[in-house]
Image (cartoon, rainbow, N blue to C red; front, side, top):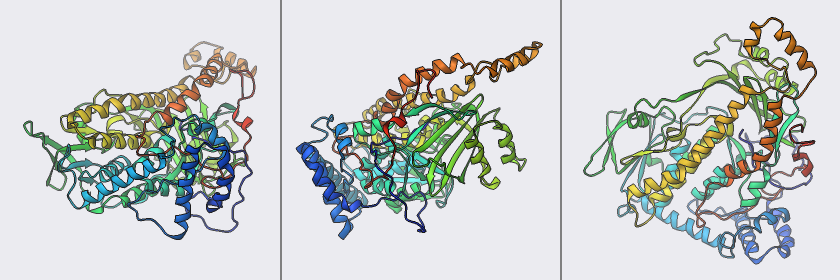
Length: 582
């Protein structure tokens, strides 16, 4: 359910500055430049290898105060390690945290940026696997693909259907795996995203009973981030994210107001001729389809491979609402029969929520009373759910049916390859749609820039790396939705409709529910989730291998690169016997 990735740190909360306007979604970070004294004091407990990583971080902080480095130079910052983070990092192999590790990452970035400069001037890529790449779609996946190719010196052109990027949609969750991949793509871009995002991965996240509001499962998601030295999960407005990505790409390589309609491939040369909505034709050695779940390229590659309706429609909005325990709780999923409600803090006193309701597709609520209808649908649910709905303006509510795609074993055909939702559109329950597109872009670019390798081999390697992982995470997302089709807190709760045909059965189950006997399915489900959640979260956060030359593991220090929180470790634990805990 898209849980955040968290960091240790049982420290008091940093008070906010009164009366000062904040940028949307920005996380306040006090005392960042004062980390030197703290780091010196910690250096005795660190190995020489990790001390080198910290010292490199401090050099970046010091230089930042006097001058900004050129955008083409990635500064591997935020490498600081506190005592508890060090416990996680100490288990890393010497190759990942060696005394030269930060320098290796810096030099690799420098080499990539030199290649990017050469590509801009048109000198690079001529002797590589491809001379020119055409990218269909300039969303998150397409722009990240452009960034990766740009950093590797591979010429490209992005064709995006909108004439200009305008603010749309609400905040998007970027989990640890996506943020670490962005750091490997472009350190400056990742730094700006982390600076502007609202961190939720340092708080309690989890599942609750929709009606009682009791915890069903708390996520201690600090573990994977600390274990592998990854950034903490955050949320950021989607339009802000796209703006950051777009500005990092050479504007001469983005063509707006143009849709990729289809393609033709020369069987003898492999050259791809791309048909555009402008009536023109673009040519390239490779076409990358990042044009979304309704991809024109995918439709031509696999006719009839339609998106699959999930069974749920989704209402969503961002409202002015904060939990009283906002400093401790980031992300909550309230479970119910045939519907569920997801809410996340997005900063600046606001909450983003999603209300999923099981129904047939195409039933758009045009009554003008969406808020009233939702309050009826969730009548009897937790007060925190109803309070968020009451705090939302009618005009801010949006509705869309949820679709995904069945996992496919092949994402390419000839010199055409799929990326992002065109390859593996998934339900939003794990918060991984955009995150997986970012992973796609990194690994495809890595393969395309590999020397002594054919294009066909690169596309095969890309699929071998990405198809199983994307399919697994898509499966997790589907399973999460299926949970609500069988969810019942007590025996007698929400009896099946066929009982209505049996005289007296509905009233019988109504009386049984009053006894508040935990439903066996709920008991077994909690037991299974408590056993499986840590391996699942670790796989999602850490299952995306990053080239060691592209990124150095690190931990964020509360009060410097993340907010200070006063959350005791016991707060992340479930109380009681597994199966009956809360």
